[in-house]
Amino acid sequence: MSALRLAVASGKGGTGKTLVATNLAWRLAAQRPGVAYVDADVVGPNGHLFFHPDFTWIERHAVPVPTLQGAACSDSGECAAA
Image 1 (cartoon, rainbow, N blue to C red):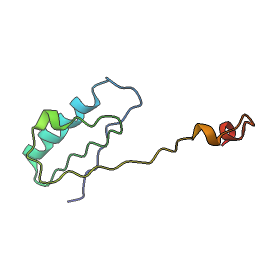
Image 2 (image 1 turned 120 degrees about the horizontal axis):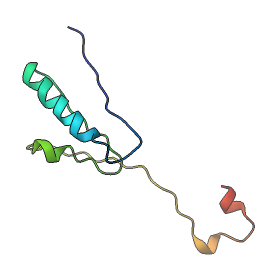
Image 3 (image 1 turned 180 degrees about the vertical axis):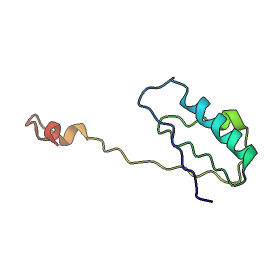
């Protein structure tokens, strides 16, 4: 049997994406083994609130955000352009 891959996505918050995704995962898991739910919300993954899982491990990922040092930046406009 081929694998089913389904993504629930939108740019707008508060539209019910997590509600739909968790309910789909829960229902599919009841019908077939091996269902995986991945919450890749960058701002606030909260699918765990629906499932109350017993975590075996937690892995956090972050992207470094550069910051400008005020004293190192003159009024030349180069910092803003970068």
